[in-house]
Each structure stands twice: as C-alpha cells, then as structure tokens.
Image (cartoon, rainbow, N blue to C red; front, side):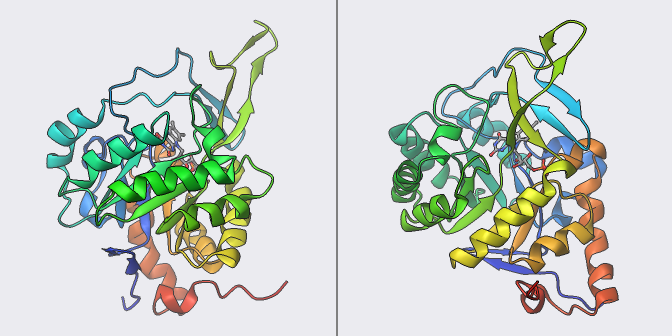
Length: 306
Ligand SMILES: Cc1cc2nc3c(=O)[nH]c(=O)nc-3n(C[C@H](O)[C@H](O)[C@H](O)COP(=O)(O)O)c2cc1C
C-alpha cells in the first residue's frame, strides 16, 4: 500500500480524512467496541452546551427512504461532565478530538469556547450554527450571514490557539454568503453540511412521526445536496472545507475530496453499521491505490469542467 491519506488542517494533522460527525458517534468511547478509534482521522463529539440538556420529547427519530429524520434537540451531558468523564478516556494524543458547540447567544458561545479552549485534549472547536431542532438559536443563526459572522467572531476571540470550525446549514438560499461571513468572522475551517429540514407523518394516526413535527434529514438521501454545497463553498472561500452528508463508502469520500473538501465526516452511516467509519478509513488507501491517487493534495479539487 503506497497511498498517503494524511491531511493537514489548520493546527492539526490527521492521518486520514475520515472523521465522524457530531451527534452520530456519541462521545467516541461508545464506538470503541467496533474498531480502533486511533484509526480515524478525527472524532467530532456530540454537541455540547454549558449546562446539560435533556433534548426534545420522543419520538425524535424516524426512518425515511435512504435516510432518517431526527429532532434530538441537542441532548447532552454538558461541557463539565464531558471534560471530566468523557474526554480523558479518548485517545486524544493520536486522534484529533473536536468539540461541537451549541449555545443560545454570542455570550454563551464565547463562554463555552473559553472553557473548551483550555482543555488539552480538544484539537478544534466546531460551532454548530445550523441545528434545525432547537427553539433558541440553532438554524436561525446559520441562516443570517451577519449573525453567523458575529457568532464566529465571538468564539474565535475566546478560542485561544484552537482552530475554529463553523458548521453551515443547507437550509439557506445562498450558502456561499454565510460561508464568506463565517470566514470574515475568523473561521479557520467550514463544515458543510448540517441536516436539511423535513417532516414525516402517519396517515393512520394522523400524527407527525416526530414529536417536534419538524426534524433534520440526513443519510444518503442528502449526499447530492451536501456535494453541491461543498463544491460551491470551495469555489468561493480559501478556508479548508470538511464535507458531511450521506457519506457511506470510501468512494463517497473521494467524491467530496474531488469537489474540493479537505476531509469528511461520517454521520448517519454509523447508524447503519457501527463499524462503518472504521471500515471506510481502512478501505480508502486501497481505493486510492486502485485509482492511482498518491496523495489527497494531488486529487483535491481536480473535478473537470462539465
Ligand atoms: C441523530 C443525529 C444527531 C445530530 N446531532 C448533531 C449535533 O449535536 N451537532 C451538530 O453539529 N450536528 C449534529 N447532527 C448532524 C450531523 O453531524 C451531520 O451534519 C448530518 O447528519 C449530515 O450528515 P450524514 O448524512 O452523514 O448524517 C446530528 C445528526 C443526527 C442524525
């Protein structure tokens, strides 16, 4: 095997581009029985808030054709418990651990960033300005370029030397406008994309399938949307982009690199098989060899004109 799968991102070196997406891989250790966490390019943990959250009422997951809807509502243990009980168990010296941040306003985001930036084992801060499942903030932040810029700036000021990733929403008319605002606000990396808003109903009970009625669509059904967003954002900004949305094979990974992504995150596919991210990371070098790709820098963004 000769392919070099390594990826350089601001302040970080990943052995491969295969990371896991926030909210689909717990706090990391839950997946240790299914593979070696050190074989992943990075682990993005479940969205963290300053205080623990119980999330939305059940049901909050519904299966859909080629995907799923979720309205978890950012249930999490809170940043203090994460830093005390979860992070120390992760192999953070070998695999970059990325904290995903959720807050209701700029001050809260800044405070959370301050707490996380002091943690040795945290490699980067991913700011979730795109969650469709919460009443305060969430997606509304990511739909307004000015707000996206302001929140990014607030986090960046308190992030110390930790790189700031901003996670964008596809639920906008112009994702490029929000991407540019985030970069102007100081984003080092952009993550594209969070879930698409959707809903599902039951014709017999006449009830929505999610207690929250509306949820976020993810899985293979959204891959073409994610690919389009990543391509558009890569054309518009020079910050590295991490692609996420429906990725479930090493071939999918290369599709995102081809349109310009530096790395990718595996999300809903982890629900299809808990060892999926490990398998994809293992398969990638052989696929690169098959296609004659020596390293990812040489392949990235080389999509030919249509
Ligand atoms: C059950 C579930 C929970 C999620 N929780 C979060 C979260 O806490 N923070 C976040 O930024 N994204 C969250 N996401 C979005 C994913 O990280 C990812 O952006 C999205 O699902 C698209 O990727 P996929 O199609 O590979 O799942 C969640 C997604 C799912 C399915």
